[in-house]
Structure formats: structure tokens, C-alpha cells
Image (cartoon, rainbow, N blue to C red):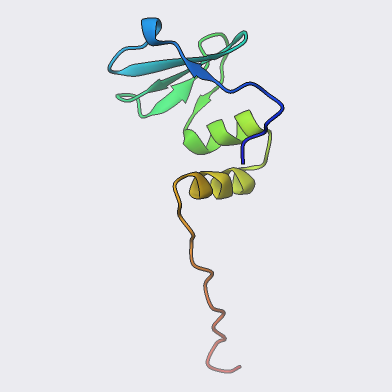
Length: 88
């Protein structure tokens, strides 16, 4: 699922707390907060939720990011059956 060519983010245990986990990949840093219910980049203006994080890290669109998150947690959303209107 995740790209094999790039190194993965690793947790920075020394700089993480119970409320915020700090992850590093080279010079990139991402902090996932629990109380703030989101994530942010302390070196820039980037912030948001897990869906935008997946889109950013994997360089995919929002829809593809949602599908990848669903696959990571084992969720297979049902495909809705098309139902025509009464006149069809």
C-alpha cells in the first residue's frame, strides 16, 4: 500500500508525549495530537485530519487517500445498489 521507495516515518520517542506523537522522515516532521484531534507540520503551515495527511504523504487525491485508510484498517465499504425512482 505505502510506497516502498521512500523511507517511512519513524516515531521520535524522546520528543513525543502522551498528548502528541512526533514522527520524523529525514528533515520532515509531523506531529499527531490527541487533544487537538489532528496533525500538523511544525516547520510549516500544513495541518489537518488523517485523510489530508494520507493524501499528503502518499501524494494522492482525497478519494484515493480515503481508500488507502480504509484498507489499512480493514474496512471494505459496501457499494450501494442503484435504485431508480418510482417512474423508472
